[in-house]
Image 1 (cartoon, rainbow, N blue to C red):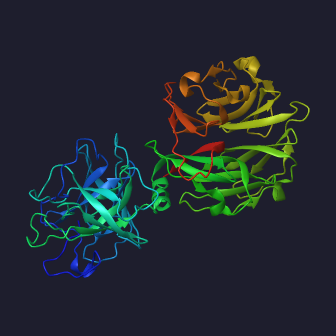
Image 2 (cartoon, rainbow, N blue to C red; image 1 turned 120 degrees about the vertical axis):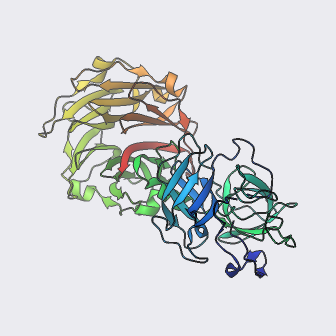
Image 3 (cartoon, rainbow, N blue to C red; image 1 turned 135 degrees about the horizontal axis):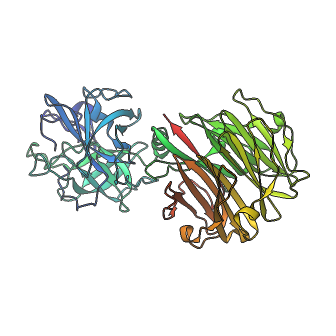
Length: 545
């Protein structure tokens, strides 16, 4: 914990003046915790011990995992001098994070806030088998009971081996901080800086920053005050998720329609999800969005959105998390009437888009230089009354499935631009009930197709091999359980096929088919940020190098 210097400090309310504080400095070899009891085994597995500097100049702090790669702690822990503004990038002093499984991992980079004592620290090697802390969405009101955890000194220990906890009451809050007071004799001590302040639900509300340290070992014995200041993090969810989504590795971008807009979230390599944020707030208002398609390409995410008025628009979410402005596709590729669905994928740096309009399927290409070809009707004379489409890229070829009369028809656009004839998928993969939703993903030499039938009551999976053979449709009831799917989406991510469905009871369920053909049990996606039940869903992989 940031601690008082030996000289007297002034107080304004419960805020200790910064000139009276250090950044949690300790003597070499003395990692130090909250004066309350030792945390029960496994209770606070996301709490991390931080050792900063070398033996000649070391300090100890506490942090909290928010996911496998990122630790949230106090920026003041990394200041080389008290009050210093901490720069982003590699820490000035070597920093080692010791996780609850006793693994020691170096901190590769830090990302500080400028408005409060908070920093994100990225681990050089992601943690395994540990879950990030749950984060609150609102600040606790005055009078609320909270719990602090940390590896700082206790009343009797200089170097506790396990985190300790203490009970605190919130006395006041402003835009960036919480003022808290220890209950009984509980206090925050040297070494607790950066530790979590949790609400009754175990959700992170703040990061502990400064304290009077009354009753802590080595403190002036006449000091009895247990007041402290913590930096709020309940309002930093988008900032935290922004860094999480830019970490190196494979991600799954998800676009979910909800209410009158489209929301984007990211599935991280550890299986956790970011919150969902409103795409129209980033890329411009279309006065409502009812459906979308997404394509990951060169680290960016291309998004096609159908507006409530039936227009088709395109934007790009860059690898750094910034968004371009929606552009009108119809103004460049020709206007289509009665647009009902869009699907997209890429071959190389070309973005291929299939639009379903007026019961027909139309194809256009956006080249790497941003130019669009004119829409071309690819279904007339072969497949009529098209209601849905799915696309996948396999070995540089575009594979397309169209749904007509409740059945799926398949074709391929070869690398030379020629289209093969349309074939009835049921004749190759078996009959199902009437298809109401379809999605596809290209993985290696295979094209995976996922469908919902019988008004969403049943779901199936099949594979088209590169030699033209098909696997029989396999029902996914044993994978997804008994659900009614409103929308289905498939994406090939790092050699595996991820499948998600939105359900009639307002959930998004996600599962993964591994390379050995086994499926994970479905997990519900946390839909933080959605204003209403999820509707149409689109997923795509992205890679951050």
